Image (cartoon, rainbow, N blue to C red; front, side, top):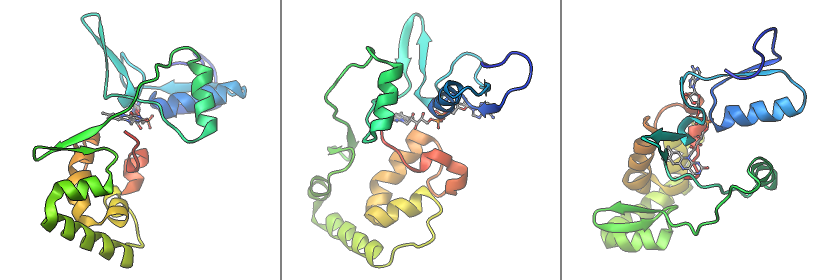
Length: 183
Ligand SMILES: Cc1cc2nc3c(=O)[nH]c(=O)nc-3n(C[C@H](O)[C@H](O)[C@H](O)COP(=O)(O)OP(=O)(O)OC[C@H]3O[C@@H](n4cnc5c(N)ncnc54)[C@H](O)[C@@H]3O)c2cc1C
């Protein structure tokens, strides 16, 4: 627990992941008294934390900083002025013996999937565009609307459930920020 050790605070933040820490940082800068309550006894950072084992440090996931928002990039540079290492990025999904770029590239994915499944993917994509789900409540709903059910079931469902450890059809309200991802 950081922030005020005694007395009242203006804001109590639950969770010392990137969201909680950023909120605490920005609120503190504005003069609010803030406490961050974290259930992990050892680490802050949430699922972007770095853990230490036998003196070696491991990031949970290959975390990269990328944002189109100047405000966000400025904040990162403010906090970590000299700590960024620029690296070319390449993420790929290994599926049925083939590599697929992640984020997916449509033509590459269709080519790798072969004519039958590509056709099914395109038909399913067209269906999603013509008849979109207007009551989007879960990551599944959102992804199916964007890519069609076939591509969702092949890539997004398995990848997302493995990385986030929760079902894609959970209500977004319960998933919170997990309904969109940038990894
Ligand atoms: C493998 C992997 C790779 C990723 N790669 C990238 C990447 O390259 N770039 C990128 O931008 N994002 C990446 N992400 C996503 C990124 O890690 C998350 O978006 C980010 O960590 C979410 O931050 P958060 O603060 O919302 O939640 P979390 O990181 O989940 O933090 C929540 C915190 O709240 C604490 N908490 C929960 N419940 C309680 C409670 N009841 N009381 C007290 N504390 C509580 C938890 O212990 C945790 O510390 C990746 C994620 C994974 C899993």
